[in-house]
Structure formats: C-alpha cells, structure tokens
Length: 256
Image 1 (cartoon, rainbow, N blue to C red):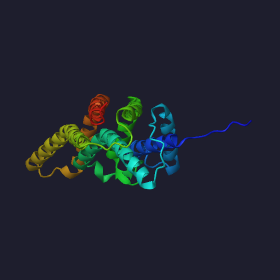
Image 2 (cartoon, one colour; image 1 turned 180 degrees about the vertical axis):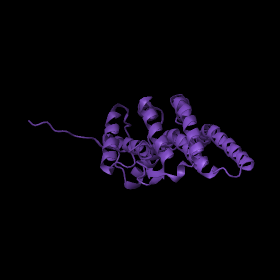
Image 3 (tube, rainbow, N blue to C red; image 1 turned 60 degrees about the horizontal axis):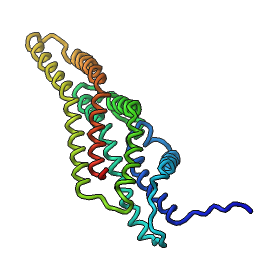
C-alpha cells in the first residue's frame, strides 16, 4: 500500500511560528545584497532556515486555531525576530554611521555611487563601510551566531510569549552603544580634519596668494584615507567586541 504522509496541525503551527520569527530576522539584517535580492530568494532563505531549526520547533496545543488566535501566536514570534534582527543591524550600522560622519567632513559625500543594499545613491565611503563591515561580519562567523541565537531563543522563549519591557531597555542600550561606537570611530578623523582646517587657515593668513581651496580637498582626503587604513585594521577586533556585547544583551533579553 502506498505510504501516506500526514502532518498534524501542531506541526504546521510550529512551522508557521518559527517562520515568523526567522522572517523578522531576515527582514532586518543589513548584509550587502540582502535587501536588494529578489523577494523569492529571501522567502526561500527564511524557509530553509526554518527547516534547519526543525528539532527546536514548538508544539502548540492541538486545537482548531481561528485567524485571531493564530495572529495572537504569530505576532510575538515576529517581535522576537525583529528584536534579534535589530541587534544584528546595530552591529553593521555603527560603522556605516561613522563613515557617514567622516565623509561629510572629508568631502567624500560629494562623490556618490549606487548603494547595493538600497539601490539608491549614497556616498562612496558609506558604501565601502557597508561592504567592509558585511564581509568582516561573515568572515568572523557571526551569521552562525545569529542562527545559534535563534535556536536558543526557541528553547528559552516559548511560542506565544510576549516580549517584556526589559527587551525594550536592552534594545535602547544597544542603540546607545551603537552611537557611542560610531562617534569613537569618527572622532579621530574629525579631529584630524579640524586640525587640517586650522593649519590651512593659518597658512592663508600668512600668505594670501596660496590657492588653499584647491589644496584643501586633496590634503583632507589623503589624510582621511591614511587614518581609515589604520581604523580598518582594527575593524575585526571592534566588530567582534561589539558583537559579543550585542549577543550577550540578546541572551539577557530572551532569557538564555
């Protein structure tokens, strides 16, 4: 007799709940090319990650679920996924924000290119920072940490449970840490550019015949590039340290 495959409703509900949590993560992780990829590719990625977490699927009670009850189950799962996705996005946005601050002062904002994440025009230095941080994120294996966090959250945070106010406090602390890291990365370059402007201003007072306007942009850009070369050498260490803090905060928020 042909074998019959029967799927119970608890298994189907578990799939939908985990898919909602994984989709919240995939929708917010700002890896290069993720947001610009076709919607079908992102859907397939979410489904594949969901099936990879089969041993951790929850088993809701086997009762007929109305649309309102199913929505009441799905919304908390999506909220947990969004919280994890926000924490991961803070990792990369810190370096993008630092690059934005530096480019405004160094003059790189005048040159724009296509941002691969949004397909919109963006500063060259901002796009470079986004690509570099995304590559370092993958080279450090932090994408595996995201999947591990998803699996641990399914064990520690039951399906249908709403996030506590402590989760909002944790996200606020992470956003503050992101701003702090971005400013600490950008301040050396900003200080160098301010000193360069002061030096050029003094030269202009000493000799009014100097064409400082044509010299200021190359000097400031060259100095910024030299300083960025030193900062890029520290990027893996800085990203790893901030990632440890972000995933530690997620562990406290999601209670694992």
